[in-house]
Amino acid sequence: MKWKYGCGLLTGILLVLTITTDQWQRTTVVLDDWLQTRQSDDHANQSNHNSDAKSVESRWGAMPPRSPMIGPEWFDPRYEITFVYVPAGEFIMGSDEQKFDESPSHLVDVDSFWIMRTEVTNAQYKRCVDGGGCSASYDERWQNPSRQGHPVTYVSFQQASEYAQWVGGRLPTEAEWEKAARGTDGRPYPWGVEPPTAEHLNYNRHVDDTQPVGTYAEYGGPYGTVDMAGNVLEWVADWYDKDTYTAQRRTNPTGPADGDFHLLRGGSWLSTADFVRTTTRMREPPYGDIEETGIRVIRVDSTDLEEQVNDRQDVFCAKDHSPIHSICPSIP
Image (cartoon, rainbow, N blue to C red; front, side, top):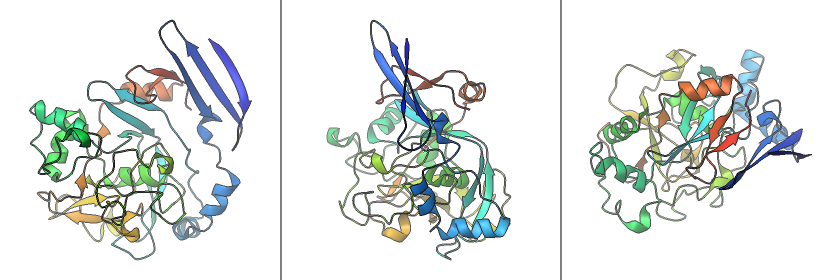
C-alpha cells in the first residue's frame, strides 16, 4: 500500500489512496475531506445570484453550510445498484419565484440517507419482474436489448413502490429528493446556476426520447447523483398539497397524510426549462403510468453504512459500477 499527496485544483489537498493486490488495483481520490469546508470562489460567486438562497439568508440570517461536491458510493451486487450518500443537515427547500406551488423557500432538516445514483433502468426493473416482485412496464420497448441502459418508464406510483420494496428500499420523500438534487446552497439546477442547455440534460424534446442513464453525468448533482433534471420524472413518496410548504414540519417532512395525487420530481425529456429546476413540483394520480414516469430509490437498511461513515471507518465504494469494492477514505 502506498500513499500519494498532490495539489488540489479547487481547495486543500487531494489524498490519493492506491491499493494493489495480485488480482486488482483500485484508486480512490478524496478532495480535501470531501470539500465539506467550502466550495471554490467561482461557485460562491455564482451562488450569490441565486434569489432563493438570498431570500432564505435574509429571512433567517444564516445559510446552511455549502454542499460537498462528491460523497461515498456503495454498490449492491444483488440488484446491481449504486447508492450515493447524502449527509444529514439543513438545506433550502422551495423557491420564492411563485412557480408551481413551490413557495415559500424555507429551511428543512433531514436525516442522512443513501439514494440511487441513477434512475432505475429497464435492466434493473426486468430483474424485479422476473423475480415476481413487479408487474411489467406498459412501455412495449422495456425488454428491448438495446434499451436496457435506459430508464424504465410508464410505471405508476404503485409499480415504483413495489420495485423499491423489492430491492429493500423505499421511494424518497419530496424533501430528501430535493436535497439530493440541489444540496445546501439553494442551486436551481443540480449542476448549479447556469441555465439548462441540451449539453446539460435531456429535456425539451432535444432528443425526443429517453437517454441511457448517466449520459449527462458531467452535470450531476452535488452528492454524485445523475439525471435528477430531465430524462424521466421520478416518483416521490409524498401526496401533493399546494399548501404543503406553509404547513409542513421542518424536520424530516413527509407531506400530507393522504390526497388525490402523488408528486413527481425532476422533469423529463419532454419538459421545458421551467420544469427541470430542482424545486419544480409535478403531480399525477397514483395509477398514472405515462411515458415520462420513472423511479429512484432510497436504501432503507443503511445502519451498517451509517456507522462506518460516522465512525470514520472504511466505507465500501463503487468504482465504474464494478462489484469489486474499493476502500473509501474515511468521511467525517
